[in-house]
Length: 343
Image (cartoon, rainbow, N blue to C red; front, side):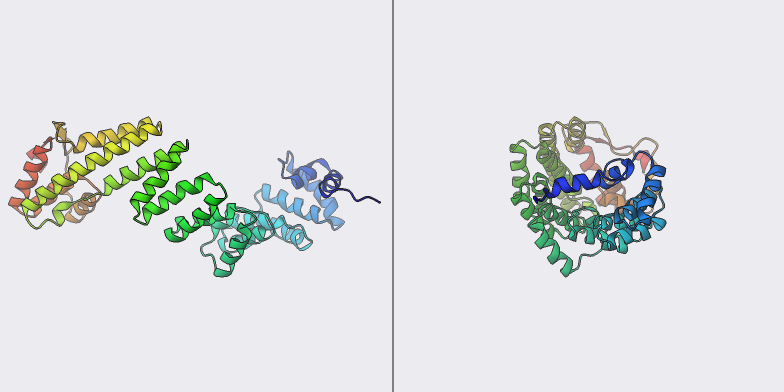
């Protein structure tokens, strides 16, 4: 007697179940939960693992995760491995992240690859990591998920390693994230080369990522020089250098936003170019009617370090007359209007 192919046999078996159960088992949308429960319970009473699973699944759909768990657990014990993933979902709804991560990992081991484990797990043990590495050979998307996990946890060396593995299997997003990991590791040149090569391959996200990185770098560059400068002359010299570099970086960022067809971000970057360019006159440094001068020094320092230039001007006054006069003259030279009523 000839054996039926496995897929055909599975199809014939699943078609033996009622309509809503059949949808449940195939992972299709269940139309009527109450009917699914009635169908499932008749099979559950006969000891069918499918009955236990679909009844637990129906309870999950009704947002009753605590009641769903015993049925899903019994389905799993009877060999319905897919139940492990939904046990993870149930525990996650109950905010038990540890148990949720445990079942999401079991699901991966059972061949149901999911991102949920990597988003739920607070910690991946060496044993789990070894298992995931081996499973990644068969399911390489695991390497991408591992890269995302380590990137999220700011372990950029590990993230880069797994993204590079994922790149070998053709995951395009892995190349983008590898570029971002390189940037976070301080390897700016290689990061930009990686992202630019992605853009040249026809992926606009490469250009967008470059633009975002450059803009972010400019945002953080040399903020609050007044706190570190030893003399007023040193302050002016360093501030002039930083303003020039910021304008150049924002201009470069705008070019890559153009390549990425991101008009809104391009305009934002160009406005920053204008702000740091001495050629644009009459710029407001402090808003009209500002009461910023009344802010405590610690608040001003925090704002200054975030890049608020007006906070730097107000802090210069607190360092003495010579620093304040130097700062005032510098900002005027850079095209800003200084209203003495603001301070």
